[in-house]
Image (cartoon, rainbow, N blue to C red; front, side):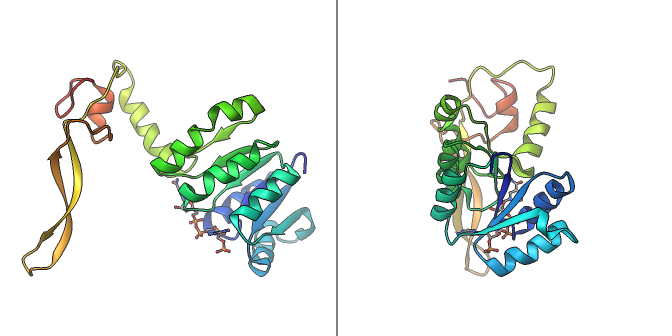
Length: 206
Ligand SMILES: NC(=O)c1ccc[n+]([C@@H]2O[C@H](COP(=O)([O-])OP(=O)(O)OC[C@H]3O[C@@H](n4cnc5c(N)ncnc54)[C@H](OP(=O)(O)O)[C@@H]3O)[C@@H](O)[C@H]2O)c1
């Protein structure tokens, strides 16, 4: 407890890599998952010849994981259990009791849900970080780099946005294909240039 870092989904690809790195840095670690046998395997892989240095915790569902987080209040919860649209908010809410939270979300629903907890996290004195994986972090880094030395966008409006439509191919089968459709009210970010430079082609100010 106290200074522990809990890795949720520790039996998965991301969870194992994160857990190994934390174990290598001598961070007090708890591997959390739903299958005791797979957790034991993950523990052996994570800490090699010092299995006693890492605790495991098997819980059957996201709701039970959240209940344990709320009860035991680890210092940090690393959530690697997707889909994050389903897991991020309940687990982060549980962290309001006394833990900081980080996840690998890469979809708008999950990230928006997490950002919606901002006021509560601030009031509780907790740090919540979402989108800490390649999907958001790396792509945003590229956008930040591209935007350097350019004026800040003051607003964004889209005049076109891509939609997936099913159209018949040569064989007669219907395949989903993107089509650019007039969509004046769309606020989807469809053009990187539109984020960076107000008034660039394909965008209009709102
Ligand atoms: N943002 C990014 O750039 C980025 C990068 C990598 C991954 N991701 C996302 O991160 C998530 C994990 O990726 P991964 O490659 O590590 O996946 P993975 O290898 O399939 O691991 C998923 C983990 O979540 C656990 N899990 C799945 N459903 C669960 C449930 N209902 N209750 C409790 N535990 C559950 C699995 O436990 P069991 O062993 O019991 O099945 C496993 O430990 C995915 O959603 C992926 O899209 C994002």
